[in-house]
Image (cartoon, rainbow, N blue to C red; front, top):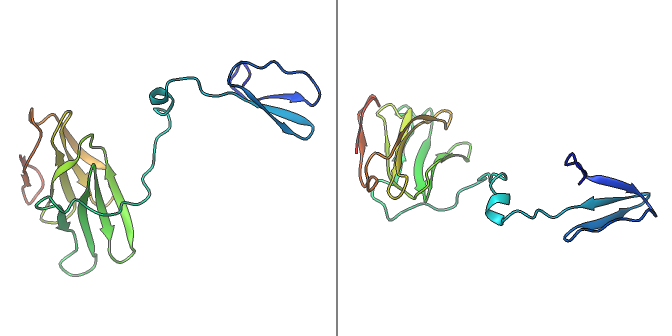
Length: 166
């Protein structure tokens, strides 16, 4: 990398200075020099966010780890379930998942509003929180940090979704 952070190129046949950990890759008329990231792994990985593509399985050992989000008239057929630190909204018709990520600990509770437009998740452990999610977008509508010193073991939500009891 050059001083500005871009990959440095050099003409073929010109000498190169090698710093520890650097490698030079030949590519025809020019070489490309690639530097190794020398930061500790936990720092180097911090700026490389992971994206969950699909959740397999669910937390079947939790009571209430699955809620029906299907419309009474049958217009939508969805379920929401817990998969460790993630809640998943599965559309049974389109066979797609909407993953709800944000918990630092395994999710312990899952509830839905009467109209099925919001779900709330909670966890137990350090930095525990309650998150109310919009089912249509998968975005958090409200986050309640540190609701209890030991986290949440059970909760319910009012039919309108305005109040959560934990």
